[in-house]
Image (cartoon, rainbow, N blue to C red; front, top):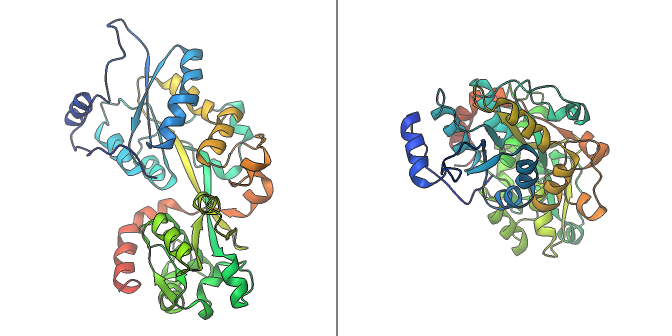
Length: 355
């Protein structure tokens, strides 16, 4: 996810903390008297606005604590957690699921407490003992409905549409460095008898059956939107949130959850291991899972709720993965295996797919 604030991550904990102090990120909480402070790392932009204006204040008041928001994209946050190890200052980290799984594997996240709200979550939100999904979007297929009708093409319902030769020169696919592109590779591998632990069938399909039809490997969602709006691309793997943004412009984009499964892209929360505020950190994560916060996230930043008890108004519900029927159409990926091989896969992609 993108951020309004990026900082270079330093390799040494003391250097890192010094840099934060200079930048003001670790600014003192006001008067010299002791005041409990909770440092929460998350992405900037609209997320930061939502937390500062609506999510943080009620928690601060209820727990007599000051929350300091440490903005940075998910990979930046992961680097900060690694750099601060042994000198933990960030208490709670909120990251995309890929980096979150890396943090879990590195032992940077502490065990989550059991709490009643944990029993209200969809199973896919339970990422492990040390991290939990707090919201989600989905990767599926977006297509220009009017263009399909004009060409007499049937409405797609499967990831296999990417191999349809009738789309030659009108297909867009994000690269493997984009999560949507990575999800697509994994789903093509699964459909061809492989998967995360055997990615070869995915590369085989991508190289021989998909790549010849691709007009653009647009690396950012904004570029893919532009290609859709110009009519150059009429179908591409899409994120549910991006699809809604394009639909809101009046563009006839249709978003589908393929029958083999759309892929859940979750935002995960991690209570940092060995941090100075373990109890407050646990309470804050549980607060993020509460129906009121889940509803705010859906309305303000397009994150589908992971709490099954959340009730959304129809207008908001239409914008996000919501409800048991849609959640049942989602699948998850094996991030532990992906993270282990991602560098190798990226090199292979650059060599064999985009060349």
